[in-house]
Structures are given as C-alpha cells and as structure tokens.
Image 1: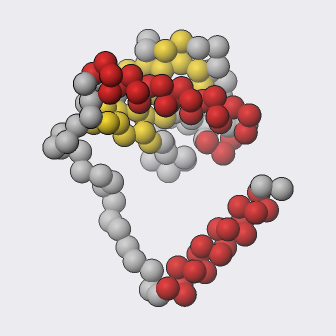
Image 2: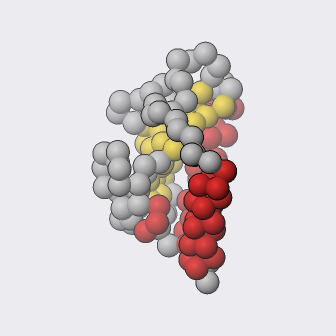
Length: 124
C-alpha cells in the first residue's frame, strides 16, 4: 500500500513498467473518468499530483508518466490512474500507437469546432 486515504488508495502495479509504478484508485466504484463526479475530480488528481512528486523526490526520478484508459485498453473496469517514475533514456518511448495527420486545416478546424461545441454543452 502506497497511499490509504478515505476516498482513494494507491498501490504498486503487479506488472510495473518501472519499479515504483503505482495505481491510484478511488475507493468507490467508478468505471471511467467520465463517471467520476465533478466534485471528486480535483481531490483525486491532487493525489495523483502528490504521487508524481513523491516519485521524483523519493525514487530520484527525473519526472513521471501519468495516464489512464477509459474503456478501450482498460484491463480492469474500475477507474485507475497509472503514475510511473521516468528518467531520460529509460526505454519507454512515448505512446505506442501510430500518429496521423488531418487531411487539411479545414478538417482539423471541423474537429476542433465540434469538440468545442460539445464542451460548451457539457459545461452548462
């Protein structure tokens, strides 16, 4: 056990990318980030922030990788955040999926506009 708080716990991953790789999990069941109530997002990510800082100060990591999956590639259907200590030339090479390009600036603008509109609607 790395962290034992009233609303969340953190523990070492059993198959770590690097030693110290920790999973932060809310105690109450939420399957994905979008299921986590808005009032819990800040406190939950403050714990992730503390874990990332602890990786640097305690494990002499140069930084950290903080990530989560929602549904796709989510091996356990319970919200969890990976906090992984990182150092230069540690062998982890960014994201493991292919990158693409938009066909045009107009296509990129269309995607941005659609997402911006959805954000406005969700924010109401």
